[in-house]
Image (tube, rainbow, N blue to C red; front, top):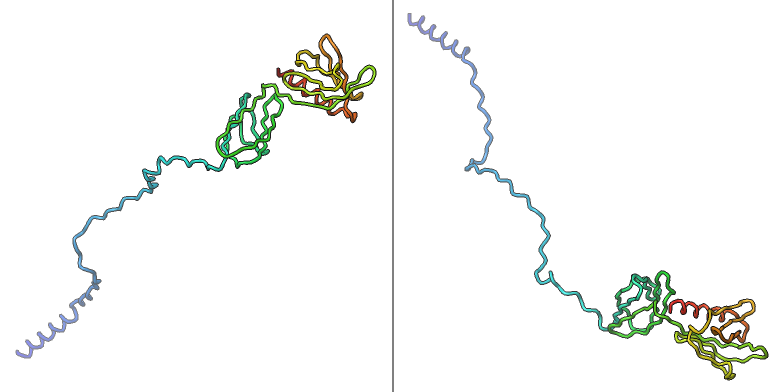
Length: 231
């Protein structure tokens, strides 16, 4: 009886060993730092690039003063918008202002329908105003001439200014000084090298040059007639 009971127990134990499912392997747990209190994530605001504001003292800084050793020129003209050239360099339309070193400088001013204005300026440090007058009659011409008579000739100097024509000679009977309005338009015969000067309703004078060059006669005639048109 005892042997039967012992055999039954042995059979039961053997069946339990073979029928029990194997134990699950232990799960792998990664080691982590202890969790602290959760804080909501905050995205930092995007920085906006701004130009630094200038110092208050520099915002209204006055312009630097011109150098004391320079000449400060203001060039104007009686024809609006005339083109101004200083030392052969275009500097703008009149009126213009510029700084220049003291000394000798070349000034040219041109305007449509007007003869070119040219002048050599001797300038010193400091301010200076230059007014170009195209509409003002400018005439200062002189020429050594020979006055042809019907018989013979005389020599002298023929000059022209806004006040008129003047002929100075040792032959006093031929000398004259009269306003431009007293003369008819001057005429030049380039081939014959002759300048004709005729007083309105009066005497006619025929001039040539000592060297027989008509260029000087032609220039004299052109200058006088250009001045007469502006007067």
